[in-house]
Image 1 (cartoon, rainbow, N blue to C red):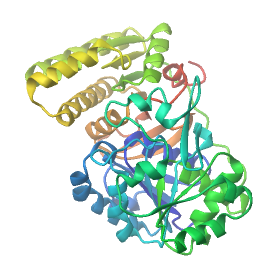
Image 2 (image 1 turned 120 degrees about the vertical axis):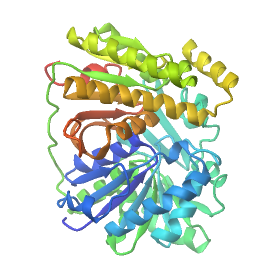
Image 3 (image 1 turned 60 degrees about the vertical axis):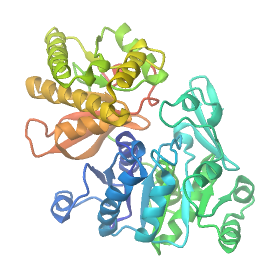
Image 4 (image 1 turned 180 degrees about the vertical axis):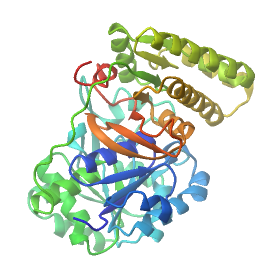
Length: 449
């Protein structure tokens, strides 16, 4: 495979790096840009066959999408790949007013073409399953229907109260949504089910995925011999499905050995996530000897005081690092941390919008990462939290990221490409709050940690 195969826009940064991970470690050279690339930026990476743009649409309004997504989609179209993918979170969290997947489809469909739009959210590799249109997600405690998921039903911005992806998406777009279900796939009638749905007027087709067989079937339907432009929607399940089909059809080798994670002596991390999974990871890191420094995000209301607090926090981090300790700066230790109530109370008193406050907190963490890197030239860092990851990479002035080695599904170790030589070459993992095992921060140090 040497011609362009796929381009993607990720609606958050951690999800975008997960797509890059799936492709790269299957032997499909991929790079992820932080802004829509022009010809000059693309020319810096002549060997890639897949490229993406890391976005922040998941936390933005439909009005923001109207302003920003057309330019990104135009850049993807210029790449000339037969498949363009709007990458959503694997838990499909969205609403008509925040991160609207339906709005993104309405913008992208006329620009990116295709007579129908496959929707694939299931990705067994990361324990996401769709059966008869219903989405399930795995945790350490088991597999839950999405509306009963212990995290997603309590999501602070887009709580999920509907597990049927068709019903959930129908609140965000007027396009007709159909389903290619397990029964059709398992009986070998996926193509017939597709034809029937299209004849009945469906434009978006959700495809059930629970295992390798359904993954290959979904990939075959998406690819369609690469003949016509396809605008696909969904999680990294889109890429898992395409790779499964490419391997089954001999277009990709069945095996590919990705690089191994190398070891480093020391690690610096920041966390803006309030996920209980991430909270357990912070606890495990602290038990391993990490210096955990709490950043009082409620103080971000006062810009002057916030700047002073960031400087003080950076000094504390540098002091801990100078003692040889792995260091982790956190804004919360899970959804029940009193710090979140302090932020909520401060926000209500201030009149500031939640989005403005979240941006200020994220950019503050990004400034700490930048200052620590430039002061220490530390080789490797970890950022936890999807929105936080976007702010941090912005502060770093990153042009693009490429995947270096697997770390945890959905959270690879990446290389930062930047014009600033003090930042270029930094190794970084962008981790969604729910991604990774309990010992993730320690595992990020590598084999000899």
